[in-house]
Image (cartoon, rainbow, N blue to C red; front, side, top):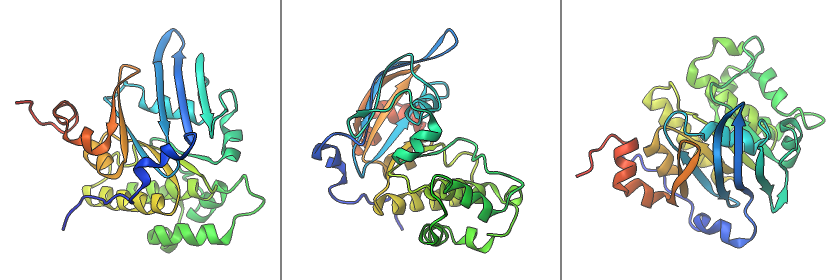
Length: 255
């Protein structure tokens, strides 16, 4: 049985239909005197899955935080559907259809699964039962554990909960930061299969992931970051077969 996740036909050219859903233009982001992003530019088309690859400290998480309003750029632009949104706070950007699943899951450990999911729908007047049904269909384990305190879940279940909580806000664009970190290979495969299903249902994904093989098998396009700059960008299949990418992120020697 192949582990490759088939991509939906036509999605790779989604960005050609009009302005990108998300566009970052020449972003410069600093932590104090340290420049974390040095002119990062990228785009994500409607319906795409785009992967961000890079070593620790390359600027991947910072890029997601800048896109979701968690960090303000010193210069550059963040655009949604061609309209600038840099300078808008992250809790307000949720209203624009951006969901962010942070590294480390960050579930509310003392609350139940159901309470965590309802918090994900805070921008709505009340949680939509259809959204809750969708999350429980995607993640049957969460349905079985809806009354369980979230801090007692396994790491994989907490990751499922973090993704499900973000989906409760009806995001058009879902940003995911290292969704496979610390998980067993079987759970990683399940998570990526669910991400494929989420994308097939119409949600656009921007994915930061150190598991380059899984990320590029899911993605339509990818960007490679090094020390805060984009050094490569191409179709995911092209990046997956590039010997430099395979040597750097898949542990293969360049012949």
